Length: 131
Image (cartoon, rainbow, N blue to C red; front, side):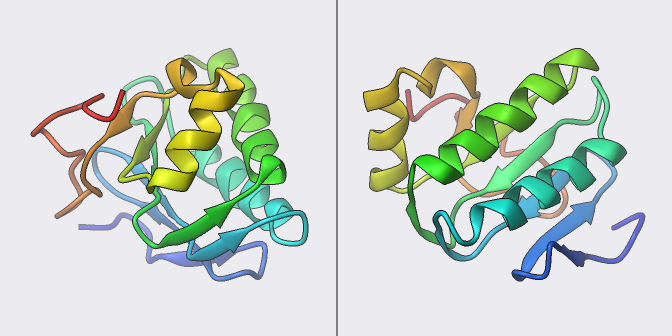
């Protein structure tokens, strides 16, 4: 059950859901140089509600493309998350995003879940299964 209703951060349709066990960020479509600032705003908002016991989970299941701008947003907010002991997880990244993370050496920086979060819970099946 959400503690707060989902809301869009940054005006690009990126929902941020503050749930009991995580804060879910749900981008849709392409994240590129034009839309990466919206992703960064959504991640920053999520971090404001997250903690070391309540990670941020980026539900990548509806992403179709991410470029280096998206990666920079993820990396910058990961750095901010580290300062508070918070983890940013990636859930259900597509092949293109996984390849971008692999090519840049960033894959080991993010715990990866094979499936998107469901019922307000982090997937329990195979965390880090995509590595």
